[in-house]
Length: 170
Image 1 (cartoon, rainbow, N blue to C red):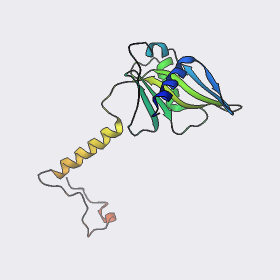
Image 2: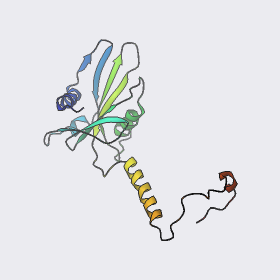
Image 3: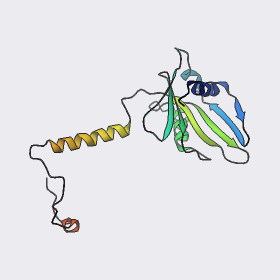
C-alpha cells in the first residue's frame, strides 16, 4: 500500500465492477448503493497510507474514503464487514461510516474470503487505543504529582495473600 499506483488501481478496481481470475479463484469488488455518492467528484482522491497501529492495513483517499485490507484473511463471513454493511444498507444507521465496496477472493468450491473493504472516512481526533494510553498516562502523572505522594506498592514484608481481607488505603 506504499505504492500510489497500486492504491489508485485498487480504487479503480472498486469502480470498475470487474473481477480478476487467478489460478485458484477470482478477486471481485462488490459495490454498495452508497458507492456513487461517496465517489462524487470534488477533487482528486490522492492516496495516503495510514501509519497508526491497527489490525488491518489502511489507505485514505482524499478526505472521503478509507480502504482497509485485512492482515489475517479467513474464508466465510467477516464480522467487521457484515456489521458495517448491515448498518449501512439495512438499518440505515446514520452514526456509522457508510460502506462503499467490499473486496473478496472466491476459490472454486469454497466460501469466499473478504480481503478488505472501502468505506466513508470520518474525520476524528485519534483512536481508542491512543486515547486509553493517554488517559492511563495522565492518571499516573496525577498520582506522582499528588501532594501526599500515594504509594503505588504494597508493603514488602507482607505476603500478598495476607492482604486479601485488608481495607485498601484511600
